[in-house]
Image (cartoon, rainbow, N blue to C red; front, side, top):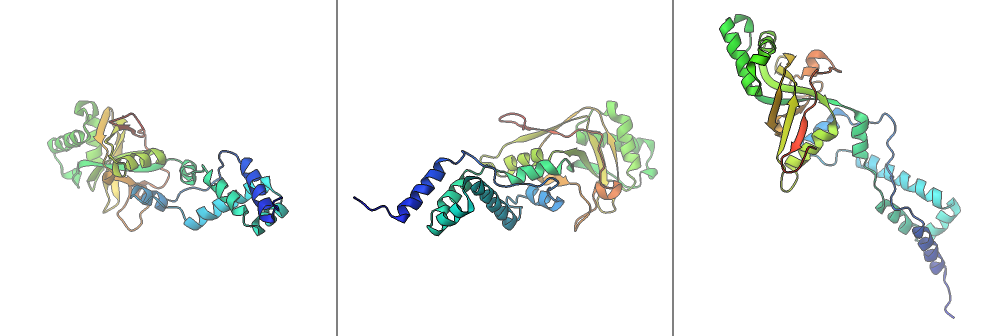
Length: 272
């Protein structure tokens, strides 16, 4: 009769535990209130896939695995299986069943952020010098750049010209979900083949912003706007770091645009 060794006992114990594992686990636990920083978001939009601290993420998953093990085995049993080199099998099997997505959860807890999308065109500085005809022409040029019906938006576009005293570039401004913006960036920049994404706004908020002097003005316009999504035109509007002034620098954090967020439409499939 073949002798049963301690190694056989240990492997049998491991096999028993493995048979009782759930199909999936969420090992990473995100505390209430934890969220992405503006730096995290900017790095994500710039194409960095790994923006979370590797030590933090690894430690989080390790603690999650420990919690699962504690629910399956006493500490004495874990110690015994560890001494006989089979606990690692269980740990690896638990980790292989991990479905947690800490990045998505952190995005959700971060909440909506203020974004700008740069359009072609802009406004000149010192509009107080303009004749009425030049103001009209400048307003019409902004409407053309935005693809808007000028007659319906004449008043708002003229206001945009006359109140943006230092002039500046033309942008669409909105506060929206990080996930949708990030997914659109991924599809355009890193999918193979790359997707063609259309951004669609209804009654958005337009902004003329002088990023050099930190000055500008915004208005809500009426109508539908469609543009092919170019991630290079996208900016997270946050307080000034090493770059130029943002709209947040001008009006303060917490600004809520009147216009709604855009819809991102994959031209080969459907809305994201």
